[in-house]
Length: 230
Image 1 (spheres, rainbow, N blue to C red):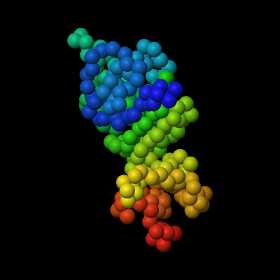
Image 2: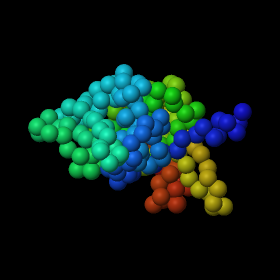
Image 3: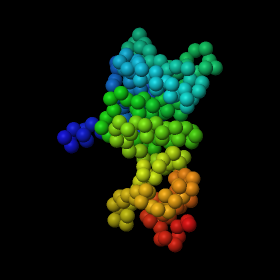
Image 4: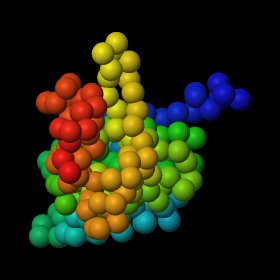
């Protein structure tokens, strides 16, 4: 039913502070909105879906090559300790000492490789705390996951946008009445022609070729045609 579909939505705005917590032990099947139970989900995957966890770690090493392993260990006081082993060091470090980008990338990979994906997954501003060069790969991970569920990503990053196809992009803005409007980029023949010639969407956006969605011009509303870049 529609109600069950909506109740199954998972909306994510991952924090860099929450995954550093040391939660109480116990496997969790799904990452929380902010990622505070990352250690619990890794515990669950280790116990129930070790193949998925191996794939996640392999993907993480592609993005952060010096990472050797990530472990979720139960402490005597009942808390879970998330540790990350970096190649230059003999011993793993606690997650709270890991870089923001490493934790965010790990959390996104766990989210996107969920063995039982929700019917709808929302991801807000994945570019925060990630190196711009990592965003293309993250966009590809989102595209791969979208073959098994519906994914909506909101972003202000031209680097993330550069990895996308016109049919995947909608520009949102508010009209004079305060209502949200949507502009499908694929409907713009000028953009399609630029992309055909090898241009990237993020670059076209920054150069104002979209004609809409620039907060410094008309408050994001559509620009008159004569003011748009040609």
